[in-house]
Amino acid sequence: MQSRWTAVDLMQDDTTRRHAEPAEGTDPAAMLALIRQQQRRTENQLFSGFTVIPLSFGAAWLLGYAVLFLTIRPEPLLPIGQGPALSIYFVLLGLASVCTWFVVARSSRGLRGASQQSAAMYGISWMVGMVGIAAVLAAVMPLGVSPGAADLLWSAAPGLMAGMLLLSGGAVFSDIWQYGLGLWIVVSTAASAFAGIPHHYLVMSLAGGGGLIVFGVFQLRAERRADRAARQAGGPA
Image (cartoon, rainbow, N blue to C red; front, side):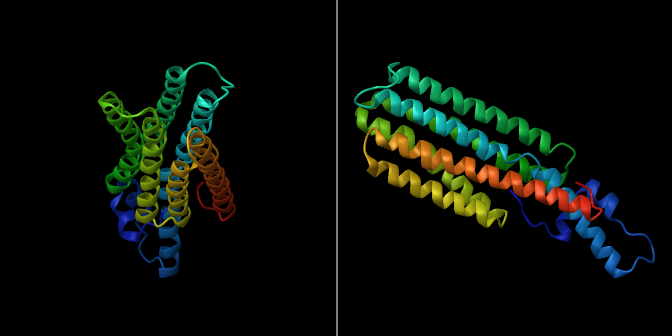
């Protein structure tokens, strides 16, 4: 998930500042090239591996919602009961959250200041949001919520949360693709609510989870192309 960092932001990072200090007598063109080189280095370090966020949560949604759909449909193809199906779904979300935490910690290592803070806050927001949604829904369920309403809430709440995180991330990082994915997830979540039970799970599995995976694959290929271009230009990967 790429962003455009200003020269001021780059100079605020300790590691970047040490490399970006030009030698005396350097001409403006060389200084500009050096600043751009350090910009690519900071962006690569900050966002390297962040594609695991849409890929991991996309896989969790694709598999988790598919299990729920196959379990509660009129003629279950996976007769394990809704309780175990929900357990599988939340285990998958938990694994995705752990992957997110690991990648954020690894990618932000060595960064300083605003760059490190932005990386940590954005990545951890996914984990905190999913845990918070699960806790709120678990507290609401015993209050007499009908089974149909509960099924819709279990699918809609995480979808809306993820969609809003992507929208805010796209706006903050000036990433039009991430912003567009956020719109897709919000629209898919809203559409799933009108699909009826149990087809709302199918919509979230294919449109929600599938959309995240497609975006993650696209970002992964874009990162690899950027790395190859940087190496060919003589800059760091």
